[in-house]
Image (cartoon, rainbow, N blue to C red; front, top):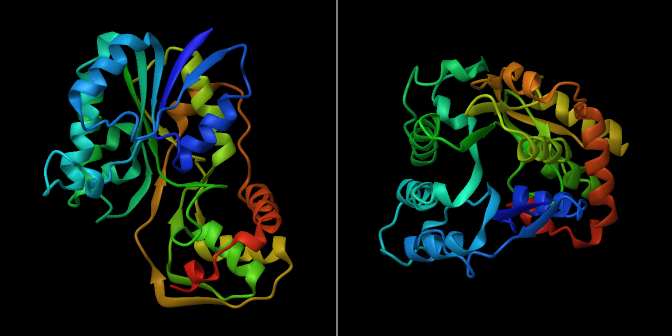
Length: 295
């Protein structure tokens, strides 16, 4: 039996992972401390926790929140992300391996990101704090012994913030009879959260060949098509409003390396994923905050 430490277990990805991996009680024991129980910005607390944990796998789904930082009033997202990672990396001899969740933003979203491979990284350096932090951390992971970067492009599913995410927001708007708005059409590479959880389990169970993987569906789809899927699934005839003509910068990746690692692995189609997600929101429709959809 493996002992797992899930960090960020109350966030979107972490909550889904904690719920999914808990279905295998004969395979894993799971610790999932809250940020108040384990402050990843505190190097002493991180060291002490890991020194006594004897974890086989650390699953790092934690996201930096500079406003919660106690070590300085002026902490940036860049500084918090890197400090959290370094506090865990310096203790890498205290756990078997760590799975870190990187981002397609490592490729620099100022420019189109089109079916990129892992070897395409570094053609330009990300300009914003989030992308730069992920880029720096990814470079460190490439040189590490037992840390692996699962680079996420787009996840969707239950427990995400439907007020700020497109697919969940579209599902909720269709349920409430509100227009689905698109700032500008764009091609994305979205991965359903249930697939992501199954992928992470595979990486928990095996020793990866590489240190970095694009964790994507490998299928690009534009926002107008996704809105059409939502309308079809919901049976709603709400209008779809596109505010700007043309296409924004594409954000897609090649997932051949991940596929070679996973073997025979069936991914959920966008239509099926939206169907499942819409059913989820229909069950909790009375809990959907209309104001989050309007502002």
